[in-house]
Amino acid sequence: MPSSPNPDRSNSAAGLCSDCLHARTIESAKGSSFLLCQRSATDPAYPKYPRLPVLSCPGHEPVSKPESHR
Image (tube, rainbow, N blue to C red):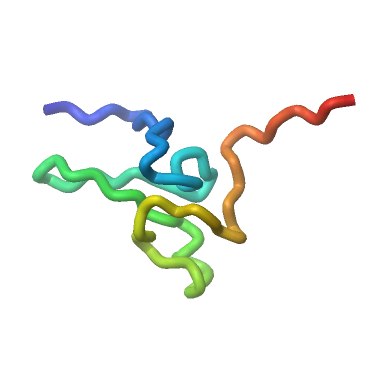
C-alpha cells in the first residue's frame, strides 16, 4: 500500500495536532500511523508522541493562520 507524500491532517480525532505546524505523521512499516510532535526535539516539555486527542497545547501553531478581520 503506497503512502501519501502529504498526509491528510484534517482528522479531528487528533485534536489540535490535526492542523499544527509542528505535527508530523509517521507511518510504520506495518501501516500504523502516529503523530510526532517536532517540538519534542528541542523542548522536553512536549511529548514525542502525544496522547490523542490533544485538547490544549501552549505550543500549538496552526499551519495556516486565519486572516484578521478589519
